[in-house]
Length: 223
Image 1 (cartoon, rainbow, N blue to C red):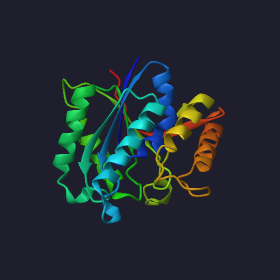
Image 2 (image 1 turned 45 degrees about the horizontal axis):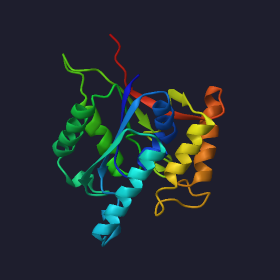
Image 3 (image 1 turned 135 degrees about the vertical axis):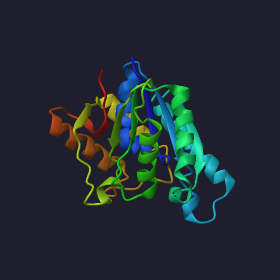
Image 4 (image 1 turned 180 degrees about the horizontal axis):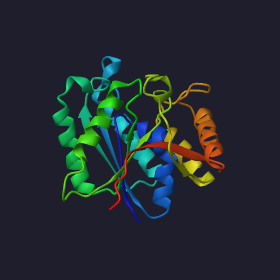
């Protein structure tokens, strides 16, 4: 049994990036812990405190649909994490990692169109740098629909790792996405249930199964 961390910038990135895989790993007995670093709303103009609370409640409900063991939140500004010293973000990630002691970490791809995604990956890689005497962890980058596909064409997502997922996991991921009432759109918008299902089928076809999620290995150290 593994301990898994899913470290993402915004509420809904976790389910878009690896929701079905979280469901699979939890179903197989792993403990999955989620960290959301940014508020997810503050870039949208004036937001009421209750709006932030509602979004966090939706994230908690999503984590339950995925059978995650826990979900934690930081409060970095949405789409403005580049305005915060990287060290502050690294310390937040380090604190979370020290608490949950993961074997596997899922996080963002650094070519995404959203600046917070790139900074999140940098913070994760910095917080987990492979120093002597430190636990080594496998780190995987996800593709996040509505961000990765619109990103830097010079830094394209190149999957080299796949997790096959069951129909139960697909159903859990769709149920998790639908918790985010203000974020879900109708197909063909990429942040929709229909497109998410198509993505599962596409990635499954690439690795010989009915459904899968794809990842890019950022670090894997075996002694």
